[in-house]
Image (cartoon, rainbow, N blue to C red; front, side):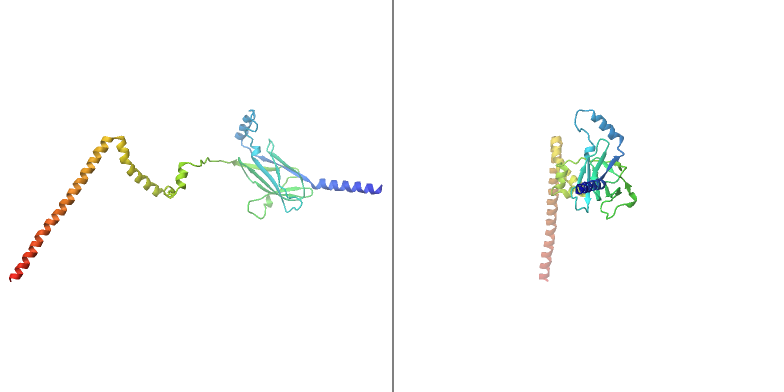
Length: 251
């Protein structure tokens, strides 16, 4: 009988110890913009399920650090009041990651230290070996407050547009440089202008072509006249040379 009592007492001690060491904490995202709340309130009146559910667009993870007995990552969702909760945590060190598709958070990384009776949270910057001790918050009884500092802005980027095709082509370097782009546009305009004129005003194009032909004919005539003049100038020089030679022979 005494053995049974001892076993019962031992089991109760183990149970109470386990309960005492497995505690949890809650957190809440605050500072939701009023326009977001009005949008969500108006959408909630529609029969569409999860039409605008900003709470579901939070990714909240608690990662155990240096804990051999726990290797899995805890993931939770935020409720309608943007409150999340982790329970049954063993003593040790954890890393809390909070990411949102819609909001910019004042801090989205926290170091969580679970002790026997208390749970403490510290803001942690990305790439830092240590966390900010001055930001200590005891969250055993009070929730961890995560303020919002802004709304994320997304810009539409259409893939496969003509501009992207030109930039990705072998001639993309032309359009990436302003000077090359200006030269390309000017040369293209000079080459295309005659065709556009012939299509818009055929009479003017025909007259312009006649003017060009006359100018070319005049240039050819001037060149032929100049070459003929040079040949004529060479003839007296040859006669003078021949006459001088005969005179010297007579002497």
